Structure formats: structure tokens, C-alpha cells
Image (cartoon, rainbow, N blue to C red):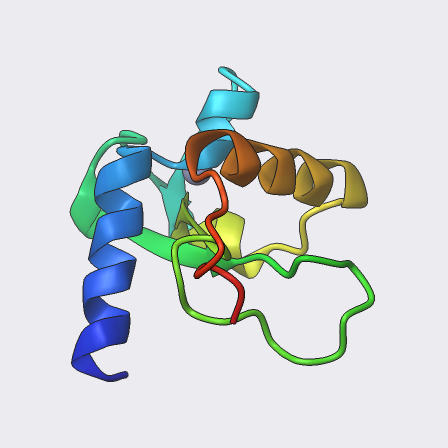
Length: 103
Ligand SMILES: [Zn+2]
């Protein structure tokens, strides 16, 4: 991971401030290796990559338009199509695209 990617990950965790699964479902419990923790404990959060299109072959780029903060167990779990669609919508809302945003 290069410095730019590390900075971008930190930006995403600061932007979201908590696991995004909590924003969607207030009953969601964040866990790391099975142990519950507060959704806003940033040092436990990871970033989840989200592709623009579900079927797009390559991995999503490591930038703010393709990443959200998520707890470790949420990241490891396979999120449903509905949840992934919600995450895409969330990113569009909090991180509007500019002409320079396309990879
Ligand atoms: Zn979580």
C-alpha cells in the first residue's frame, strides 16, 4: 500500500466516522474477529471496496469514490446485493463525482 492509498483510506474512515452498516441499519453490531465494538472506534475499522458496477471484472480502485469504512467482520462477510447497492448510493450522496474522479 503506497502513501497515497494510505491517505485515501484514512480520509474515508474520517469521512464516514463509523461503520457504514450502522448508518443503514441501527441494529447492526460491529465486530472485529467476533468481538463487538463501538461503530465509531476508528482503529478497528477497515475499508470496504465497492465497484461501480456489480459485474465489473477488476477490483475497485482505492479511492474515496470506491471505499467506505466498515468493521472487520462486516468487511469479511459477503454483503448482499441490496446492501452493496445501498453503499453505492451512499457514496454518491456523500462524495459527489467530479470530472477528475473517474479512474
Ligand atoms: Zn459494523
